[in-house]
Amino acid sequence: MDKRFSSGYFDFDASSPSPVSSPLMHPADKESQPLLSQERSELVDKIAAILEKQDFLMHLARAWHAFGSPAHRMETNLLEVARYLDIEACFFTVPGLTLISFGDPDTHSSDTHIVRASDGYDMYRLEQANQIARKLRKGKASVHESIRGIESLLAAPPLYPWYLRIMICFMQSSFVSTTLFHGSWREAAVSGALALVVAAFELLSSRYLTLGYLLNVLPPLIVALVTALLSDHLCFAAVPMAATINLLPGLGLALAMLELSSSNVICGAVRLVTATMTSFMLGWGTIVGYNLGMAAIGKEEDNTSFSSYSSCNALSMWWWFLFVPLSTVGFSVWFNVHWKRWPAMVIAAASGLVIQTYCDKVKVMRPISAGIASFAVGVFGNCYGRLFLSATNADIVFVGIIQLVPGSTGVRSFISLIIPET
Image: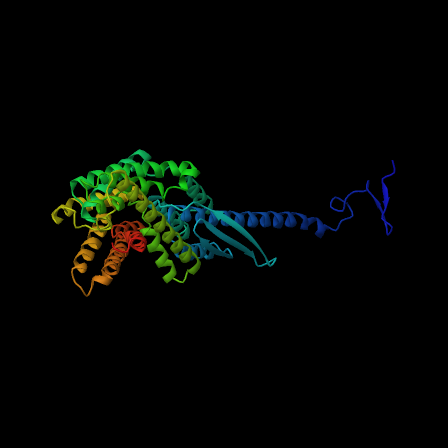
């Protein structure tokens, strides 16, 4: 068969030896072939290293988002890691979503990735993710090892099992009822029992999406209904918010203010609207449950006792020395804080609560009591992180701030809109 082909300009013989293997090739051209193969191999390795670094940044963004890192800190930290890895990238974070754009200065192109992660709070795994990023920046771990570490964190189960978290809700709500809502032993027992129902509902809502839509309405309705049915024997105001303490948007509201103050307007506005709507739904469910309960026992609605502590037989504040540490341990378990950091949690929460309590007794300082207490908690958290070289102090600040219950302010404000007499 004739293997000559005509291209219109010249003839090419396919049976002739290739230029690479041609005996007529110049010796210098033969020597350049290994160099071309080496350059091609180096280029492939360079591209693989860049893709691996980009993969690590996406894994790190997903981990920080899922474990509860604030948006403004997350964007700043990701930029620092990208600069260390010599990767041109920009980041944009909103609750539940992170946009990452990788640029290529050689080709003047960009590649955008959408990283989705469910919002949550896992302080132990957040600290582990920060340690992995810190080891990488100090040169103590490779990019490949860091990726494997982040993947193992994302696949790992929570620090505490689900049944322990449900059981701890009883202790948590019981002691919060006595320390923050002026409850007695009866209100503490009822708050703890109803908190078990709320915790079970929250656990089921994480597995069944349909129940998740009712999380902020149905549990407070059930809690208020049961409490109203027992209103002849209980102080109503001390039970509903204590039993639903984990649903109150206090932490979300605090993060919204923090991100708005750091000029992260979009993420802060989203969190603020979410916290406001959560307060509306919790308040609406509480009011409906209270009205249904009062109608069931044939009593008229008493707006005065709805949020008044006048009928509460508060325990002595000496019990706070026992109840505050135990409730702080409950919050620590709920946020998956490692047990070694529990003493620091107790000190932070106790200091914030004591400062707010005594500032409330001074008329001039009453409007800023929560701000002073929050400032004290933040200072303690930063000092602890500097002193013990901790990878994060967010867990100390979170647990200390949530003890101040800023979320109850939003719920009470919505209730007061509907019931002006309270």
